[in-house]
Image 1 (cartoon, rainbow, N blue to C red):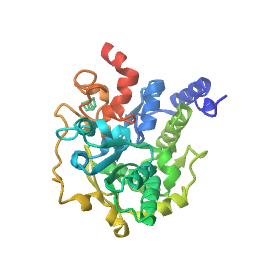
Image 2 (cartoon, rainbow, N blue to C red; image 1 turned 90 degrees about the vertical axis):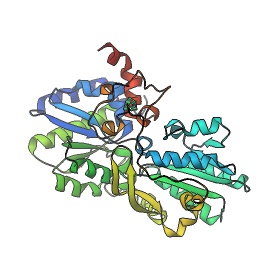
Image 3 (cartoon, rainbow, N blue to C red; image 1 turned 135 degrees about the vertical axis):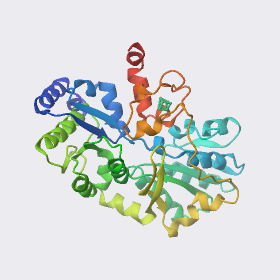
Length: 370
Ligand code: SF4
């Protein structure tokens, strides 16, 4: 028996579904803010096991999807420089910029390399001292510690050919931004378990109080997600709005203090533009001044054309609405026709954590039949 089997147990799933049916008395809209949870919900059809009162909507839970188009354009400009080795996680390569993506730059001869850890980029920088190595640092709080460790290592090694294009984003400010938007539909959140494993969950208390929404830290397996939904519905029906922890096998209130210390040593909060949402104060990381020498934007600013224009993705693409939970992928007119994983019009169809990719992978045939 595998460790995850008990969290995919069909009987437990059925029992939880019945319990949610029993306690749901009013219509409630609940958002998950994690692409892994979105994929589990769609893959296992968990939303279809819920009573009609409960609507699950998908939020901005995919860091690749929320990376703004101007940063993709900047990445493409950097990758074109002949002395640059541009390192990125694979998901970013096919995310469309204004005119091209990193894969096209690679096809035209740009030295774009897929890495699996930020430390891979350190190794590349060490073995290529005559080249400039840039890493595209994309991710939520979960991947920030590994990125920070790589930067600390580069600092200790006095690496002079290692640079970081920072695109890290933070989840709680994005949740607040959604809640304060006039079109907000969210009445309760499933918070991302992996983010809380690093950061803990104290930071959600003020959000619960200010916006009167329950937030339940939730894991990724079917039983986790249905338990999380049940806990949110329970609170909503009782008129409560507090933080609860469904994912206690991995998450503790304070989180991983060592990881937080490393993040805090290297990064400081900054305003970040989220694709489809806009600028959100304190929702991203930037390098602290001590580590400014590793900032790719600063180092290459005179060699590339930087744009801060909020250019739009393809006009058919509704990724802004998808990322705010205002629309489901299957409601986009381009879904499965002009937009597919082979020909993506927007990041949510490219990324392995994107909502559109999840719907295409698990629901495309049923959506087409409707
Ligand atoms: S299906 Fe494609 S075009 Fe539509 S919102 Fe998703 S990524 Fe954009």
